[in-house]
Structures are given as structure tokens and as C-alpha cells.
Length: 85
Image 1 (cartoon, rainbow, N blue to C red):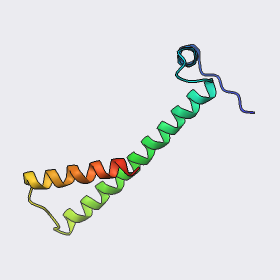
Image 2: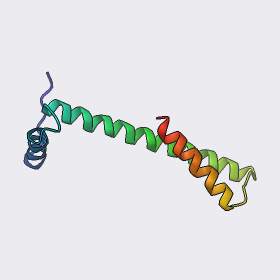
Image 3: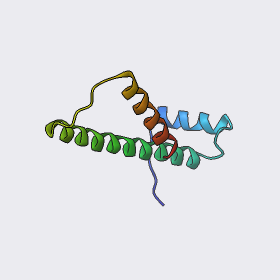
């Protein structure tokens, strides 16, 4: 079994989260935090790939005129992508 030392401020936060009743155990708090970190890392990687694709599009001259309709379409796609995680 792995043991970790968190330090006083983190241990106090962990304890308060369990005492609040939101989590049943300290393990649940840690798992939830790690799950969120994994999602954050996944999202960062997605953004990196999208930036690389955009840079390639720019280099190849594949550009779109910026219009309100373009922003609406991009917003719609972003919302759909968010809910399909």
C-alpha cells in the first residue's frame, strides 16, 4: 500500500471535505481530484492538437472569414464536444 504525506493544509482540507459529508472517505476525495486532473490533462492535449491543426491550416492557406455565423457554428461544436466527453 502506498502512503503519502500531504502536508497540513492539504490534510485539513481533505478532512473538512469528508466531515462535510460530501465524500465518505479520504480515498474518494483523492480519487475525485485525480480524475479531475486526468480530465484537465486530456483537455490540454485536445487543445494542443487543435492548435497544431490550426497552424497547419494557416500554413496551407486554409483560412475562414471571421463572421458571426462562424462564431455561432464554433460555439455549437464546442458545446457538443463538451457534452460528448
